[in-house]
Length: 250
Image (cartoon, rainbow, N blue to C red; front, side):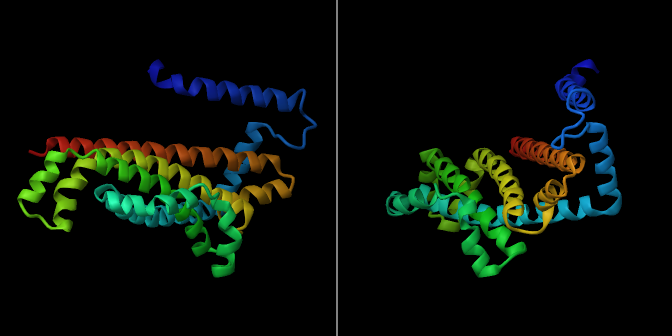
């Protein structure tokens, strides 16, 4: 029981210290609020529905953008991993585009789609596709060469070779890319909403800041952290479930 509570010791101590500071030395601060007031602001946002509405928009955008990134990243990464010629042709393009900050695309994407869902998805997909592509390419190159020789001996077509040989062999490594992509998608989604898109958790956070409501701002910050933690735990659970399922297969 005590071992299960250990991860919560430091966060609770940090919250207690913040509570003490904001009610004593920093009681006149306009930037911070006691965690108890943040909890009240969180409850109010949950009650009026604004919390769930903003969270649903951000998670929907992040999931859609990550889905696009996964599709493109796995497809192109597999192609570049299987073909040295394709990898050589695409190297310069990837290395030029990959360092471009995703937020730098916001003005261009806004011209194309304006504010809203599609704009956010495009920026998230751009940011998330590179780790998916590069890690998929590395995973394909680490597939046992003898498995590819077996596929050639069986005269499997490209689709059958991918689904029956390459994909099962690289699934464990793909989850590393997925976990990285999930984190990037959430971070970029909130960043886009803070910078440009008047929807979602990031926009709610910046509105709380502009309204000089530090309690609500702290509530949103804490909630974004909780959402990110929950997504990471869910991804780990999925990874273990898939690994267990593959281990049970003959």
